[in-house]
Image 1 (cartoon, rainbow, N blue to C red):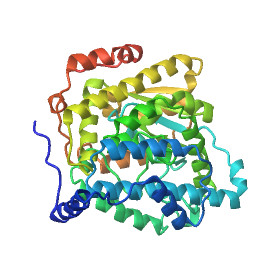
Image 2 (cartoon, one colour):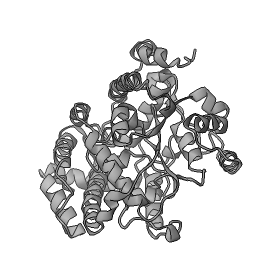
Image 3 (cartoon, one colour):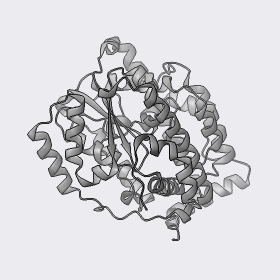
Image 4 (cartoon, rainbow, N blue to C red):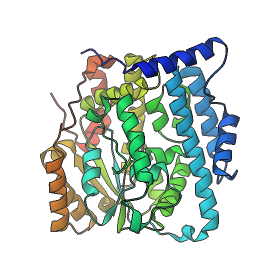
Length: 414
């Protein structure tokens, strides 16, 4: 099956040609120079206190990898620059706010619910359904994009940052018209934790969006506990003026960090999703191909397939080892199989609530059912892909992920 061509409207082609002209003159525009990014963020935020310097190594490794490996177009450089500046500015503004409000250190996060699992295993629909429970508090895209000042209960649905985020996601849809069929984004939709961890430059977001194998190799050797310390401070900030009973959180990166989650949030409740990796791997490769197509004209599907295999083999290995280490916490884990999610996701979550000792009310059931009826599977388009698109081999997938499938009794497709 031929992969879709890169979406390059006339305006984007013209922009990329301008950048190519600068490159031919030995100029890299726009700048991804570390000192330039830091000084620009400091000027915009009006502060030079980043709340610690631990992020600097990851940022340096990432920038080097972007320049040497990512083969960015001009649009890719612009997008990358503004994204990184956003994270740096948020760090500065969050630290400013924390220093002015030291009481945030006392904010308590109790029994957060985490969804962990391979991407493309039903995590998004479960996240969206959990968000229908009026007692649950997911982070929404707009408040993760611009967390300062913290959102307030009285204006949570009318905050002007929402409309700013709407514009951002409309632009994303124009740049990647095939994306909604693969993964939906929106200003007021629940946002996963990938961009929160990106503020610490310890996140799978970067290798998902860019070809940065040097950064990926560095990332896999790191202790990600600092990213969860930042994650907790971020949630304390968001909940300080608007909170419900519990946080509900989701990220594929959590799969490799179960130990770190439980060290940071000892009473966390974890829904661990499962699906045949032979279905997951090509779907995820297709998603990375789509993301990276916005930022580069040099896409190698075979390389993407190999990177996906390596990345998630390691993540699952760490997850299976962590689950064995935490066998003494059976009431904090609930295994959710994709087949059950497809068959009846509302009943699956009822069973998860029962397992965690949470009250699953009739109101929650009705709200979840209403959401499902309004958002049927496939309503935003069909995501098509095959193993051969990325030079993937079924036998190798079966071998790579056999330990995981055996430990959790994952049903295999034909």
